[in-house]
Image 1 (cartoon, rainbow, N blue to C red):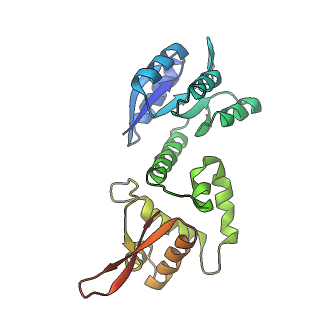
Image 2: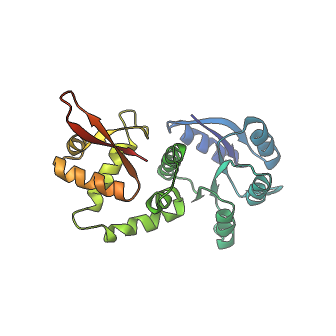
Image 3: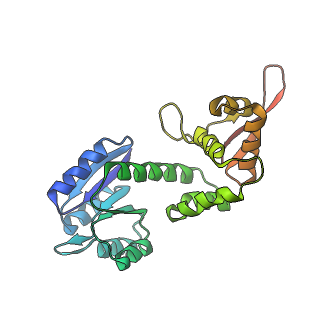
Length: 232
């Protein structure tokens, strides 16, 4: 479970965020602050993993609070949820290393999408030993638009939609949670995406070339070697 603290001075909006969070698996609300002083205490004592932070407070700004956190080397992840629309506010948020910037009014689907990406982001980082450029492009939220543009540069025989199906097989298991240790063969992948073994293997080998997957060789009951693939 990912521990979360909500920092929002509007009681009604804070309650909406709390209810939304309860509907999303994998997250646990451990504290709710309506001012920055309480927020500091909750972060220091509870050490949450994620902060849902507003910008405007009577006693200061969430951006200054974020700068204070970073000045003490606090590595808490932050998602800004704010009515602020100024470009300077957005720039300051990016410099502060926020994971995402959500403009109010908050919509459930937008929050759910962000938190799903955040879960995947943590899962990718968990066992990461080295990075290749495609991995970096996936890990940096602000690169998401660039990743979508890469479809035009895919090699012949590799379709963007099918490629995403292959990635999805590694990103989700029956519980809906990402499993970075999942090993899968070309035959199994073909069944999952509705394609032949040859097609599935082409996509798997392409992901090997980009650094997203690695391959192991296993031996069946009759000793026939088989390549099985997993996330790097």
